[in-house]
Image (cartoon, rainbow, N blue to C red; front, side, top):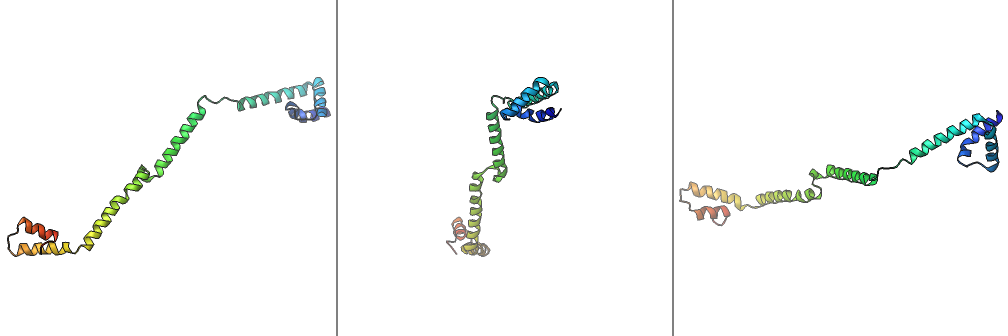
Length: 146
């Protein structure tokens, strides 16, 4: 009985060839005469075989390729989700164009004094009762006539 306890502690190492030669001889000799320890060794062997079978489970033939494709699709979705309007760099290049056009238009409206005087000059010309020709109106609008 005392030998069984010691042998059962050594069975896993015995099964994996991890114990020294003295312990290996002790376990081998005990297994010849003890049916209980033989059953314990058989159970350990079965569990070890099951674990190795699970570890060696073959992967599908195209597993790595499909996993790589899935990762690339996920990465592309993340980029689209975080890019501006889903357009990426294109939208970052196009958005400043309308903003610049609007800013320049506002600056031209503010900085061009001739346009305001042309408007009042056109109103004055029409109110004066003089006949306005196309050339006169166009000249007043463009600021070439007063």
